[in-house]
Image 1 (cartoon, rainbow, N blue to C red):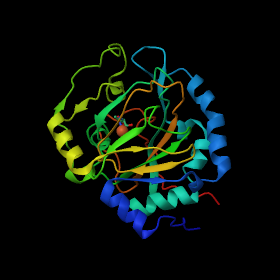
Image 2: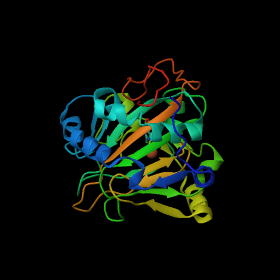
Image 3: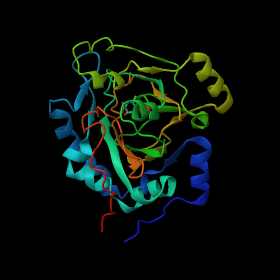
Image 4: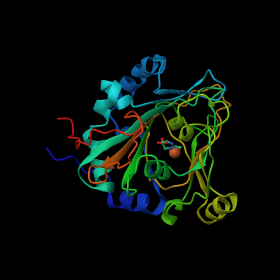
Length: 271
Ligand code: 6CS
Ligand code: FE
């Protein structure tokens, strides 16, 4: 069965123009969100290398590889409408390169500094082309108070922007494994502030806000960040990073499979 093509021509053009596309909460069937939300506490409870803490050393920041450990997430990654939208953007034959739940906990959920995602998948995983797409499913309502994803519109058109790399391990992670360095509140691949300011002045800043269940698609080179969550409200987001099977990781010393999947089998939509 071929995946559906749920995005209109205008939506595909908007994604190409802006570098992101926010879809309403009706994009997924209502029971999907409840199922994913129900599975989150168990994902967060599992201690181990997949779970990354905030620099406070106790708040969970992210859990990686949830499409590998959780059947609900594995099924979500194969929903015909999700798979169809992804294939409209990057072509047929896609798999999940990386998945995670970003918790952004009330009061303690820390920032994500301005960054592009693709440079991590190029430098750490050896993925040759930015033929990936981020799919974020809002597990909670995202508003201006609980640390929304902030984008710089049309900032994906200038390729890789990073100037200097932060060497060594970020403060609070001195004893953590090396692959943690690109997962913390201290961005490893720093982008100069004048470059960010120029792009922000040109394209403008946008907060991707919406009700729980909203689906947000964004380009691997679009500049984005999120502020700490100072509110008492949760802001969980499930992220699925789809890649095409024609664009495999080639790193000679690959990261753990929960950060860079190695089973490049094209996903078939759920029946
Ligand atoms: O290193 C990585 O794969 C992750 N790091 C960031 C900052 N974004 C993309 C990805 O989830
Ligand atoms: Fe990111």
